[in-house]
Image (cartoon, rainbow, N blue to C red; front, side):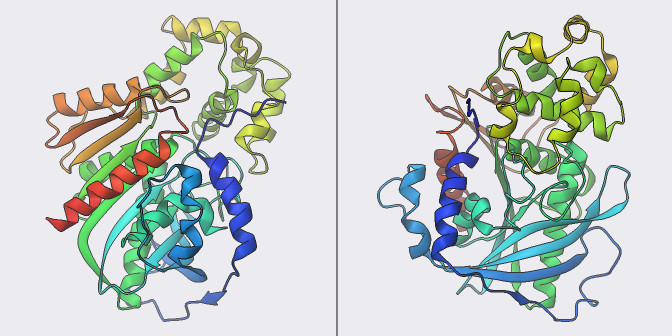
Length: 406
């Protein structure tokens, strides 16, 4: 059977299985009163922060070679990991519960905050709030001295709706509201947060990072002032990427294509899966994204031959400029046409086999053309989607270190 994950979650899954065996989880609820710092019934309300484990650098160091960490790369801080429940907005603009993980390094007086957005996950329990090891990238930032948070996103972790995959506003809400909840936790527990705030994320997390950056600066600049942003290998140019993919004869991760369409069909209430997909897949797809199966599981059930997956009428119409409803949704969630204020470094492997490198070159050109004040493109020569993950993580963390040292 085919197992084309195409995402960095494969090594994280393997590490999680072995890591769980070697550590004991500690349950400890925070019962401090939160009313003074934490108004109820609003976006970013902190519902609960539960300590689940304390992780030492020694427990993690042995696993770094599996990611290709260079010799001499050392982790510095013991970290307390908290499962966090908070409030955000759903597709109907109504308050709904969401979850994430928060890593607090020990031994610091003041904390710089990094929000780390994870790559594509379909299984509801393969996220940081359920097991902190699934937020391995966020854990590494924390062990280098950042207070780090990682949202599960809507539809994952504690949230039982369908995940709104690659939806800019709903993705940004999950990020902003977890940061708000973290600030409320700090207020309640007398933790001193600095004014430095960073964003980073890989794959889908790269997309979510850029979406959050754009919406923070355009709509919430009085609340969020970013120090540095590192989007990594994300599909920022959704409209062009979709056109390019639908021209292919085959694609080795059909689950990702099906996920985008199914998520948009849910958020925008098209009810058009029968028009877009061939049978038996049109009937199968609604049940595939219930949080019980992984990307690899679905790739085993879907054809890589796109003629077998998509209705030919749909592909032809879309590629010839029709299907305006679908095109408009993709355009609405495409992250181009703006100039960031905060410094940005864009990381992407030049041989990426899942998310085309052109996504990043296009985003870079667009940011510069629209007046981006400090935008750099960091190509990872020869790296594909899997092998680009750890170099991007190391380089972005080192860059963040340099920014907070200024």
